[in-house]
Structure formats: structure tokens, C-alpha cells
Image (cartoon, rainbow, N blue to C red; front, side, top):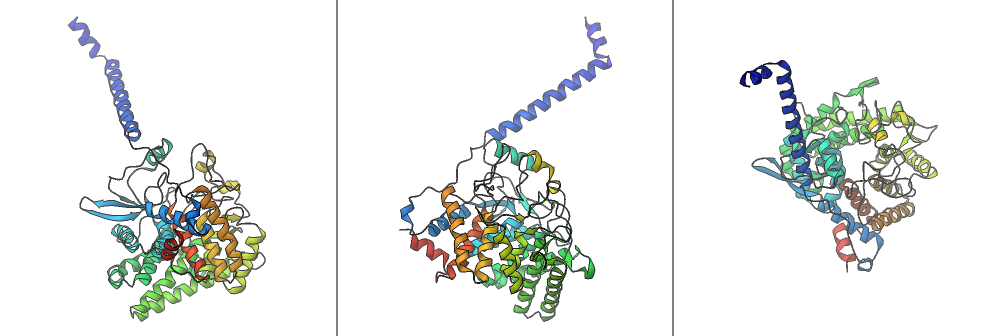
Length: 465
């Protein structure tokens, strides 16, 4: 019998079979442990704000209260090292319980309106902590792989908060995030302007200069003025809008303009003049290459003729567009019904399906960045109307935005053409989304200033009985 066993174990098939069985067993064990770890996490709970409507004097006040609570709920203390932690703004709760540069960059406007200065400062510090020697800033700070993140959401479980945050420097398709880099610069300088935190800008000035220098390497084309981006690289990362994209370059212009102002405030005259000249060259290139008088708006890119609401509205709100250009853009958007039923739709006319990423087609969300609507864009739409003197039209958009928020009892991520939160069997709209919430707060502050109400915090306090 012993000789028979020895004979069997000496056969190659025995060892290959034993090895195969061991691998299968270990794989099964690891898979079991992996999914058990996910399923042991606490279940996701609704972040909807339940209320009695007559507690608030107006729909706007109630919506502002909901947006404020949603934004505050996204602030979490996270570890950068074993001995260092920061108060970080997360993008969301269900799907994106991590900090994204571009999301935070826009949400920072709302945080500053609420005087949540520490969160802005510490989130900026967390991103600057991970800046590379070349000046590149992370796309996001996260702690788990995107597949695992999806599974937490799919099974309705909370993502872990105990693990250390780590940087990710490229988008899901491997391209650098030029818009996220620019928005961090803008957020930092907006924070300094709002708080007069001289120590912060003195500490991080060289990092800000490095960040802008890193962007400069992507300037291409005639005169080398505009940034050139890869496919699926900006916030509309399900769309192959590559090349010199309006939205990204408006952000670049704004970052350069803010750097010029900041340098001037520190009496750095040569740097201020240099950034001002760069900003002017970007503005002229946008006007020359992307403005289409026959269409009445800035086109999406040098390869796409659509009206993308992101770049056009930012151009108006930030003062890049001339008065007649701003009026023309708003007219085209109104004629196209881009703010109905939920302000505001991403693009008109829609991008062709061949530009939509495969994963969105398979996930049955092809319209995520096409005919869907995003409230953060609606916020900039309100601001653009206010800046151009169309307060009555701005009021109409505010009524739609606040009505949707009150109806949903939270600030959802994205809405389908029927006005309901966008979803499929594989994906549910993030709820709440801090980017949207922050921008709505900021937009209502700008809108409120036209009615003699300049303090968002006072409005919340005054209208809650």
C-alpha cells in the first residue's frame, strides 16, 4: 500500500491536481473573505432630510437648509498617515465616499459661503500633501479600488472610513485631470481671498506655482495658449471630448487670473504681470478658436460644435465672455430648453453615441453626460443670469432647482430628462452629492444678494422658525 501511494505521488498528474485544488481552495477562501468583509459593513442609510414644510418661510429657505445639511454630512475626518488626519470633504456617500479634486474645487464655493473655513483649508492641505515634485496634484484621495467601491454601493453597504487615504493621479481611463488641477488652484486662492489667510498662501505659494507650471506642459496649438486634453479626461468622463476643450480652458484662464491677482497682492509684480499675460493669451485663444458667431456660443472643443453648458456658463459667470457673447449664449440655451425640467442639461445638441464610453453603454447610462441635468450646472446658470441682469429668469431657475431639492428631500447627483434622479439596474444617482449641494448654496447666496440678503447663514437661521 505504501509503495502504491508513493507511486501515485510521484506521478506528475498527482502534483498538478493537488496544486490546482489548493489554488481553487485558496481562491474560494479569499473570495469568501472579500465578500464577507463587504457584507459585514453597516447598511447604507438614507440621507434624505425629513421636515415639516411650514417650519420654513419659503421653498428657497427649505432647499437651502437641505443643501446645507447634505454638504455638512460629507465632511469626515480621514487619516493621511498613522499620525495625521484632516477634515476632508467627500464627493458623496453611496458611490463616492472619497475626495475628488474637481468636486471639492466647486463645492468649496458653498463651504466658504457657510464659513466652513477649516474644511476648505484641511482638504486643500490634504491634496497639497500628495503633490508630486513636478507639481501634479491628485485626481482624488481614496482608500479602496473602484471595483470594490462599486460593490459596496451595489450591495448597499457603507464604504470603510478607517483606512488611510492615498492619492490617485489619473482618471479612470488613464488620462491626467487638468480641470481638477485647475480647480484646486482656484479653490485655494478663493479661500485666501475670503479668509485673508496670509500664512496659508505664503506656505503654499510655490506649490501653487508648481501646479500651474504642470498645467502649462499641456499647452499646444497655434501660439501654444490652450490646454490639450486626452479622451474621457475632464468631469464629463464618459464622453470622448479630447483636444482643446472649452470647459478645461476656461478653468485654466480663471486659475491664471487668480494667480495674477494673488501675486499682485503679495507685491510680486513680475509674477503678477506674467500670469496676467498668460491669462490674456488664453482668453484670446478661446475667443479666436472656440467662439462661433454663426452658432452664437463657444463650441465644446476644436473638434466638437455642441454647446456645452459647463464651459459657456463658467465663461459668463467668471467674466470671460463679452456682454454680447453672454447674451447670445443664454438666448441659445433658453431656446433649446436646457434648463427644463431640471436646470441644467449638459449639452445641446447631444453628443453622438460613438463618443460615449463603453462602460456607460453597458451600464445603461449613455445619457449620464448628454441629455441628463446636473444641479451644479444649474447653479452656474443662475449666477450667469444674475451677472447679466436677468434676475427674473434667474428666479425661475431657482424655483425649479429648489422645487426638485424639496421634492427629493436631498441634493441628488444627476437627473434624467423626465426630471427624476437618473438610475439603472447597475447604478443609482449619488445622494447626496456635495458638489451639487455646495454650488446650490453659493448660487442662492449670489441670487439672494440681489434681494438684499447677503448672508447665507443668516438666511438659514432666520427662515427656520
